[in-house]
Length: 91
Picture 1 (tube, one colour):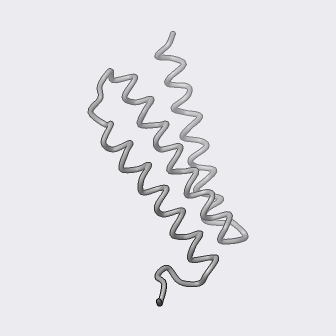
Picture 2 (cartoon, rainbow, N blue to C red):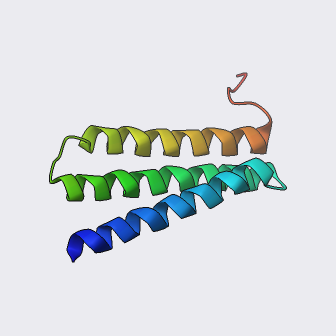
């Protein structure tokens, strides 16, 4: 029963990621695209976490950490770029 619930959660996460990809492609503003891509990163972390539970392994822990760090750094960099117009300070 628990595996069935986890499989349903994987399907729901997949549909949510698909909807976020659509928002990233068709979003009216760049801010919408950034939020959609950040949400895809979070959904990917959840997807891999559920796969780890289903497979009863810890092999993907490093992947979760790397995806989380990349999602955060990418969102922060894009927010800074949209706010200032450049990524690097010219001091």
